[in-house]
Every structure is written in C-alpha cells, then in structure tokens.
Length: 124
Image (tube, rainbow, N blue to C red; front, side):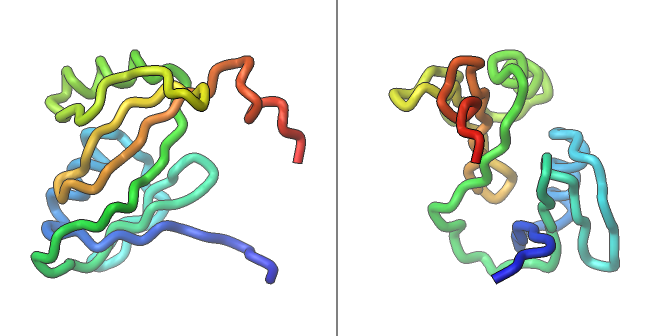
C-alpha cells in the first residue's frame, strides 16, 4: 500500500465550539476550509473537523501532538482557560506528557521528546 496523504477526521457534537478550540485556543493553522468543515495543519499531518456527531460519548481514542516544551505549553493553555486533565510529567517510557481535552472530551496528549530519548536516535 502506498499512502500519499493522510488526516485524522473528527466529528464534533458542536462544530463551532470545536473550530474555536482547535483554530482559536490551540492556534492550529488552517490548511483548507469548506462548507461544514475545516482542515488544520497538525505538524506533518492534518486534522479535519467536519460534520456533526450524535450525542454519543467520545471513544477512548486520543490525538497525539508533539510540542517543543510541554510545560510551557501547559502554562499557556491554562492561561487560555483550557482544562488540564493530567499535568506535565515524565512518563516511564521517557516522554514528557500533558493531557487536555477538546470541547467533546476527546483526549489530546501533548508530548515533548527529550533530546536523549530513543525516538530521536531511531533513523528509520
């Protein structure tokens, strides 16, 4: 299989609240807009927020976002009024993580990869 492009799609309960959160609060840059949806740049990938979901609860999936300085990002988001569901800490696997949630309660894992972490040495 040859993958030419990819993106994560989410269907929020309230699209306007989700667009305000991802584009406004988190400040993700817009890659494309269309009637009923917005595609944001998400590092080397994309996040499409479009359509509307039912009132069903959000599943256990999470969005993983690597940031340069997770503690500084946590402080910035706290000041913007974002609820922190798990504060910054170094996990047993060596990554520094902070967890937040979008307006639907979808988990977002903010990750800092320390300079000496094996991910930085993997040359695949």
